[in-house]
Image 1 (cartoon, rainbow, N blue to C red):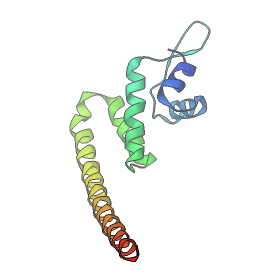
Image 2: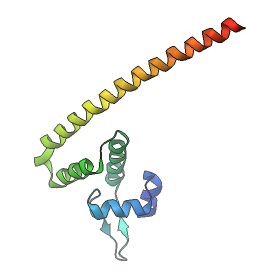
Image 3: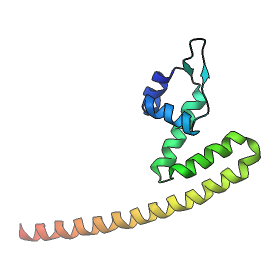
Length: 120
């Protein structure tokens, strides 16, 4: 697929895709005879994964490190797994914190609803 289609499917702008390629978050794209970038389904899966890492708070430097390890191949699987295990622990802590915050909000909503009901 060409860059416009990858942009539509991934939700990343064309400029972002070019930037990601430039800084090494994306592997260099294949080029057709006209010099246009060509991407594969695996590139879309990679971008989906990168988006999830970003959404969970993994910084650009960590994502760049992960991408560099990925580029080096299977010899880095342990390092990549370790990175994900560490990041998962951070995400689990965020979820726990958000769950506690959600419970606090629910308790406050219940309190206010009971107060409103008393006034009715």
